[in-house]
Length: 193
Image 1 (cartoon, rainbow, N blue to C red):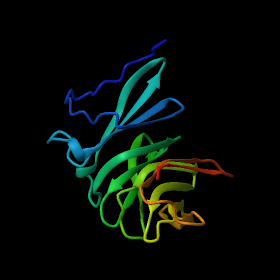
Image 2: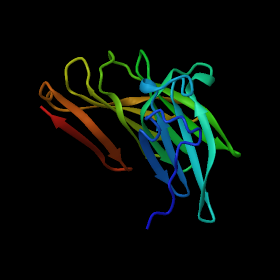
Image 3: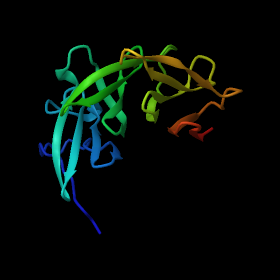
């Protein structure tokens, strides 16, 4: 049975609300991609909903354009416990990590791509564990790049942890569609080609 229908709390009807969705425990994260947005969604937004005694309510809305040093949010998000990672549009390509501390969602770090931007950057993002994130990045300079890895450093900041490559470049016209993982496995789905 349908538990709840989470509609755009702003009633903007922009068509981008819920572009990507992620669930973790009693929270849902949704991203509204800025590509089709008007003035109500500058740079994209992330909505966090919380379930309390069976009722879903909006916990917060994070607007990319309202935070210093952040570019636009894209259309990929993953929520894990008290953290989420969201794709960012920009040059170099980026992904932004947020953490809930004492009830406030704070920008915890930015993971930058290290190769020239390509149109497939971060179609999918996934927490591998609490301190490791995989960011889909199909293509790269030689066509073999599958993902960037970002890690939480001892001081709580985020930085690069390496890349994952295919042994051979995949065919022209292919694209990375989904990336997911856990402590021991990284799954990458490639379509087309």
